[in-house]
Length: 98
Image 1 (cartoon, rainbow, N blue to C red):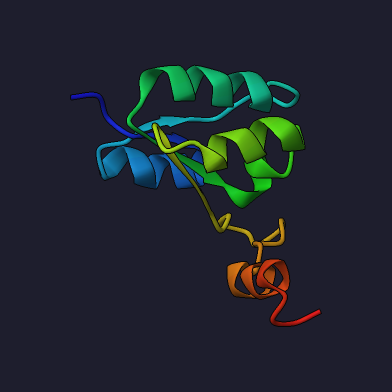
Image 2: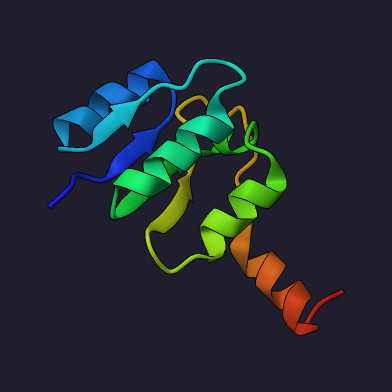
């Protein structure tokens, strides 16, 4: 079985490597290509919020909607990229709050 792939900064990648993930640090401007490669190779793709912010929105949205491989966005180590508030987004989409 293939290992999960983590896409993020070098420090976070070191920790994910220790946990058994195939941790990758995409070069600036290569985030979308790194996501595409990870989607083709892994059963689970974990993307830090700072890298997710650099991926073209249609590509990221398609990856998050796909059931296989499962793709998740996790907070970045430094907290530089805003992490989406899923609860607020779901309430807005369901029409519970405007």
